[in-house]
Image: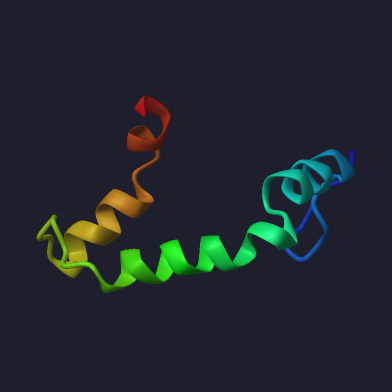
Length: 64
């Protein structure tokens, strides 16, 4: 049984899904929306430690 490292390419099926979802034609729109989001005021006020806890808590990901 082989193990995949994070440096290896994702499986071909995932690559195909990503190509379909994130087309070059839509890139400018995606970038614009991302930049708008980055420039918005934060609606949730959390300390750096709280953000880290939320990002690393596996239970939160499974319940969403």
